[in-house]
Figure 1 (spheres, helix red, strand yellow):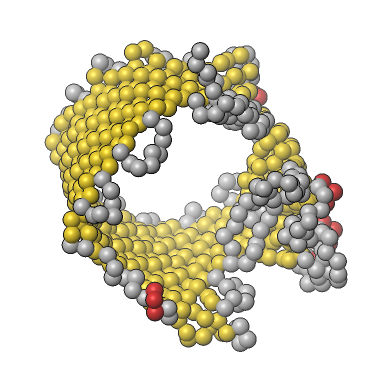
Figure 2: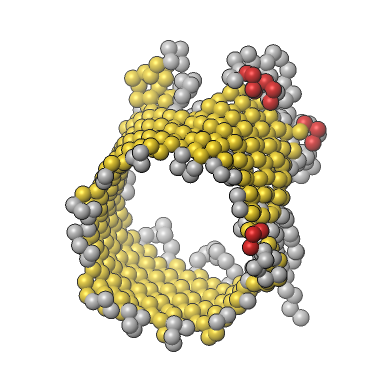
Length: 560
């Protein structure tokens, strides 16, 4: 008897993956069971030296969902022949019932109050959000990280982690377009939750307090101002000894909520924008500053040590047939001027779209990047006129689309082309020859018959890449078709492509791709699919080997 072994069993029980409205419990069925079961057979053959998958591979998967008075409990599983073990990696339970303006959170949940305080970190605990009238209230408390002891026996690198807990609350007032929120977040590690690691220099219990303000104000339906600001105090080592810092911002508040010692650092981050709209003209300017190493325990990751200014105007004309938008942005790092190099970026972009009629449209896009890095005199804190690196990148694209025919039989022609160029200057002589450029035009014709429910597409493409080291060209053609039969119960599509390349004026080889997919639904809850893909590459370069590859798939699904 064949042994059915388990590749992986993944059960994620998340009660109320979507929040439940307790006000509608009476109108819901007491118990509901729904979901789907899928089976798949995969076939694979190749002449490659190393196979990327097994010649035959089967899977059985499902996603049943149990619902009890609107509270849903979704499951999922995958079974295959790869391994002989049943695993349940983790269970996460969560519930978010709500009634009118009150929503409660229990178990594993995530909440966001602002970008620089509490922002999407998963916690295991309780929370609530309430919007009575114009009030905007929120609170949470729970475990952010579970304790992980150091393993001195295992060869795998396991980072020991202190148990981390936290709470946060938000008090705000206003509407969706005019509001102000005040946020407090505190997170802390429990030093007694694990034995102190041997390498305590890199793993220490920490404590964090983040204060935030978030607001948006809209005036006269023309001017909109928004601000998201955070101040984070992070004590990197609760075991640290020595005199505490004296330069404590908002000392009256912070001293009562945060343990401060000489390892504590206070950093700021924020983003503000001002936009103006008048008729068909809109202008927006944005400023963002995140100081180096800014972090909070209520968020997973921050891009820091950056200052960014962006100006983005846009307008429409000719009866809104033409729209023009663009942006100019400046960015720099080394905000504290303590690095030996400073990187400055300038990013410019322009987009133009024009549709003189419903059948004809054009679009144009231009993007320009300039990055330069210069040496910093750390004694004088000045930028020395000593260029370390400078890069220029330009991307230009243009496309035109024309539609003709009738409402039943419609044709469309599309032409597009793009040009990219890159150049670089730097003090390292060995890396100077990095200039490159490419151009990629393409042309396609598409047809669709609405009554007969079928269509086809033909396309040709070309690419020319030139650099100081490599010159390559590639051209190709692609044909595809699709159709529906038997009152839409049967759908099928097929495609083929041929590409040929040249490398440094020598033949590079050619590639043929053929693929087809068919789906048949004999009944409402049943679906059968069949797919094949074939690829064959002939190479004229001795460094690249010829190969052919075939992949087939048969799958069946049942929905209940």
